Image (cartoon, rainbow, N blue to C red; front, side, top):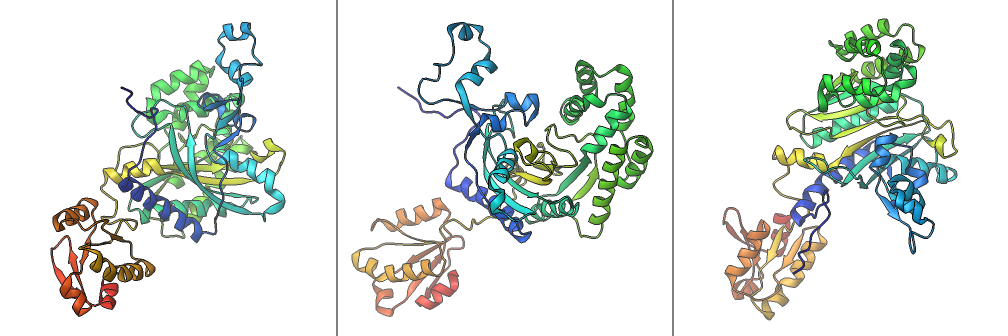
Length: 452
């Protein structure tokens, strides 16, 4: 007998889980709105020409590619099939792919719709993305991202506001976080100083893995990527730089004195940290030189957020990408953005038991049904409660009381309303609190006031 299943790294979500997920989405949305961001959506699939080459070599391997409609093998010869070159065959048989993130589709959107928007354009987007990664704890093949981006502005005030957004979201979710900040210009400057300016991508991809694989393995990978032993040795004290943000910045000014690009990155970080001092930021903000975020399109400040009280990878991140829209024919448009990992935030809140006890989406009150006469009596009250914004259910049949109360209890419905012969004669309703067992006889207006 066939046993249904779903692909690895993908999940179903129950009503209770969806309520918790929407708590996260709605919290993030509310903060985005507060800072003037507007919502857009882009298609599930993009042309592979839009996606390929934007995420680095490793990212390209993780793209889910979609076979062309119809006879997708028509353009491939028998010899090409026999060669079993997966990348080549995909280029012949696949024109589309599932989006890997929301930033590249957004850059494509900006180029296509630039005549309709006012710059700077502030958008947010909450949609699923797909990565052909190996599923593991906290890492899924299908997951939601919650992005906010500003394009058409070079101002570092945008970076400052993004850190404020991060802080506000996690305050609302009651998650203590550290915001790690670096700058790709500093990383480029370091590559120059150690004599490997052409290896900036190799260096950043490797050191971005420091937390995951450790210093020895990072050094081994650097050497595998063609970085000289001397350069690797010069890199060690820079990676291990410690002290306050101010001390690190002062040290970097000395180390990068011969690199104009590196010093520009130091200036940018100094501005961001100095501006943040003027705000009540609860999050720990830290200059972290090992933060590289191995995506090729970042060109300035980069961010990564870690939960302080839960064991999991980064739960938000982002950065500035001056050159991304230029790839699509619109040069000179600077952008900066952040992305919240909703699924990882969900896992953190689960670890911390941090979800509200009562969901705003669940049914608040269930009307017990005793029969046709009683049903006629309660339905107008049900309609009025729903109209006033109270989530209300009527039990679907005149079943035994025990069965109806058990239904409410199983669904976590906090209140039940009963109306029998006496209540109908008196024009009242009995409101039962399912948690305390307390019962009160109320008029319709009193009932509405109690449940509002």
